[in-house]
Image (cartoon, rainbow, N blue to C red):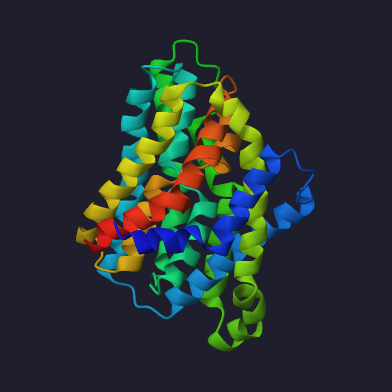
Length: 319
């Protein structure tokens, strides 16, 4: 791996703000981002990514690459929770194994947003259809996780139908906003999009830095809970994303030749959901422990990906 690429990523202001948030928590500082402000910023980031993706999609022609990208993305979201579940159930309960598998099969919109900035720094572009691929990868992993829990759990406490799980996955606020913004961006003319460009583009990196500061604060608070879960959870939260990201970075060459698209595939495979999946698991698997899968996804996998993972996945693609 190119060490210059790693060092360049480690001096990214957005990443440094994330580390500042973690440090503030460990130092017991009272630094905090108001909850309403944090929610607004997260909604803004999803809106901006979705809208710009729709604009990119409007300027591109529908090709076989786009169709195969969707199929490949959904396939990845189905396969990852399948094999993760059988690894996890050796150490954890069926409910916890299913919830963690669903989280690691699903995707992190925040990791996606951070990856977009990383690609811009490295001067690579990606297709607007990758925003749609990301949104479509959210639900399949949740559905697979629920199915596996129902098959292997003798005392499943879930009373929700599979159709309600699927509906909840697609009506989740983050998924609905990014899909809706994608469609609006697709329908808007170039002149109309230009009118809100200062909001969708010019202030994006600043808002991302503040949001990652907040994510750092949240991650720092969850580290203590995670340390109690033992070495297996820590190893899984680092090694599985690394394996998933590198494997998909390599395999994606047969789906698309574009470096940016392949990198997005890699980070989607390597990321873990800590928004949509916890919300779904609260309904379908109330016995699953959020104090286990939330810190794994947010306090370990997320910082690993944005510090070390990104340069590794790009290096695999460029090798």
